[in-house]
Image 1: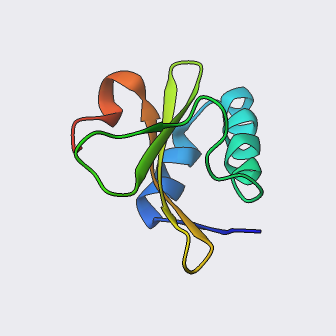
Image 2: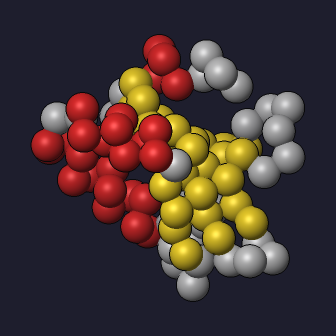
Length: 86
């Protein structure tokens, strides 16, 4: 089972989300602990270990470290804002 860590910026992003969407996104992130590459996950082009999963109009960007069984959630944002840094 993988351990899930959040960047501090992700915590701030999650607080801003509507509660109905927040619950669903947290549930998707928690499922990553048992399967870090679920159906619908996409590896981001140009990166070595960044992946994306979708929930409605929101995207969850995360990295996987298989050696340490660690998942780091890097960004959670609306689809029109999430890819600006990647």
